[in-house]
Image (cartoon, rainbow, N blue to C red; front, side, top):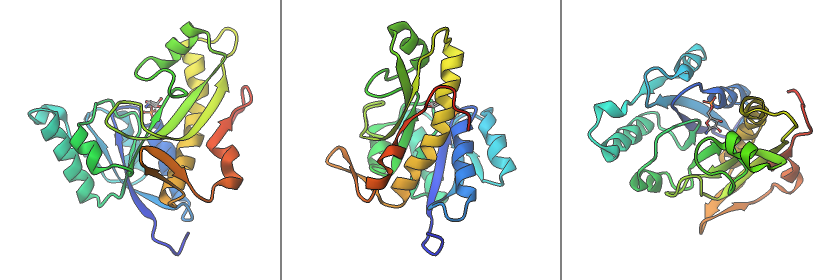
Length: 224
Ligand code: GRF
């Protein structure tokens, strides 16, 4: 991959940016098939902006307060992505709903990480809801973004056990650790063209030997 052009990736964040940091860390390796060309936040106080800056990644704040309505805001985000010459968009804790027009523009080229094993627990407070429901296995999902929230075709999932005595925090930390392993792996597949969205499903090619990687099952308290 070193000789081939790396795909230009922009990351959209709203807060902490730990998944963003995991993608940046993966892309430091020159053999990784994607480079992070920019980070966009809808919030000026997003902690992830500082993290990106320490890695010399260009950052832009596109605050919704500066725009009249979601369409205008998403148009400004699209403009910023175009200025970064982004080819792929990774949503990493981006906490705003996207307009159908924006989603359409990035169809098949925009992915998201969700802190649950979709299609279970779409939306917010996934860890609390997993605990309340009593599931014994929880996890995270990377999926293509489609107009319906948390509904796009699944690229990769990671599962962790729910342990006796777990709180929202301990379970969330366990899931977050595998998020940081899963997201770079899913981005790699997309950047290498080994997964694409077609007719509303994720179509894979050349991942036969790696199927165990796109379904990470994390044994207990594994530390990475
Ligand atoms: C993660 O749990 C991610 O799955 C969800 O939002 C959270 C963002 O965390 N979409 P971070 O900003 O990446 O640390």
